[in-house]
Length: 66
Image 1 (tube, rainbow, N blue to C red):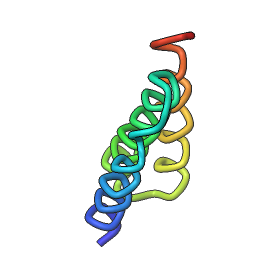
Image 2 (cartoon, rainbow, N blue to C red):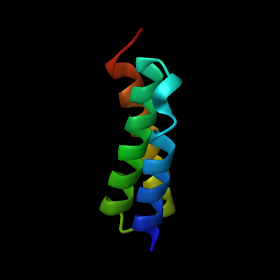
Image 3 (cartoon, rainbow, N blue to C red):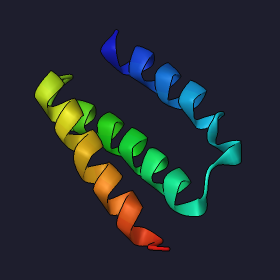
Image 4 (cartoon, one colour):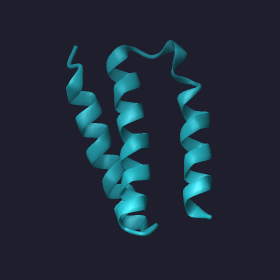
């Protein structure tokens, strides 16, 4: 149940990226992908999900440094 809910939240939040800068968009996408990856790798653990989101957000932010 956690994975489908998380995936729906990520998809809905990505639809709000239209007015964002490239760096902001990459940060949001990185956090979403990291959260899903962290949840999958840790079997739905909240710590894994939050940790994955943090790491993904940082990586996404640094990919396109303005």
